[in-house]
Image 1 (cartoon, one colour):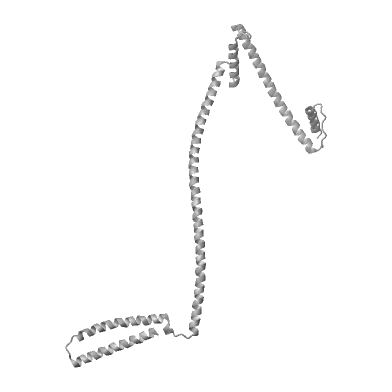
Image 2 (cartoon, one colour):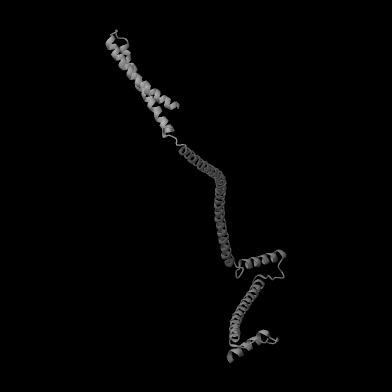
Length: 275
């Protein structure tokens, strides 16, 4: 704890400089946190110091290379920066700017060619990527068009479905109303039928005068009428025979009796229907 506290105080004094160290609550947690910050700060400061030393070394190397190149130009070619013309100075400045843009160590041809090749490859890759993105964009536009058409068709189908649903709802409501009307009318008819049956029961109406009984009698009358037709045809041959008083009288009397019986039965049924 004492070693950590000493290191923390030393670190705070170094960081704050002439400013006084602010008061803080001294406990195990705060001391541990400040100790961790102090160690991290020392590591970061060491890394920064190493980086600064590296930059200084590179700067000294660049400075030595510059002096060497100036000596080569001055002693070997007889050129100096002061004796260069304006265009030559501009060319040298452009060459330096290009070297800085390309990130090469020097302005030699062996440094420029790989840098230009790398830049050319980067441009080709960028153009390739641009073409690929353009194709993807066209495909997306095509898909977007198809999606918009599908969305329009779906919206039309939805609108049509909504309208059909409204019509069906109206029809269903109308059917419900008709059903209620039919149920009401059915209950009314049932009540009326019950009242009529009660009235018929109270009047002691004979079941022979019911509609079903009358229909049965009407069917019997039609049946008897159909039975009369063959009997009438059966009498027709006897009408053309030569007169034989006895036989003719017997046949005629038999036919008359049979016909009278049928007529009587028919009249009874007709009188019953008229009543």
